[in-house]
Image 1 (cartoon, rainbow, N blue to C red):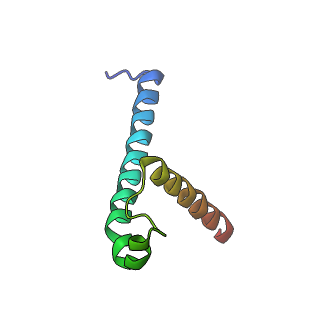
Image 2 (image 1 turned 90 degrees about the vertical axis):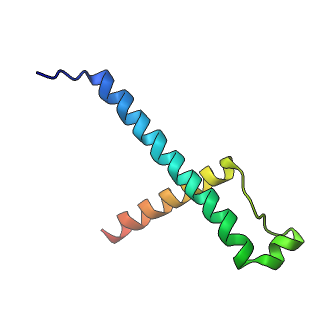
Length: 77
């Protein structure tokens, strides 16, 4: 019989959460780098918008969008 300890599940859950956050941040960075220069070429050229963002800025965008989506879901239900 397989015996699973609570600590094993906790480590696995933390690992899954970290991987999901990392994948979302990576997705935002890639999307920003590919879309913003094409959508706003003049703003990037003149320095009003950045063509590439840092990992911390991408994490902030992911966090902001997560809170925003969660709020919209709660309001509609």
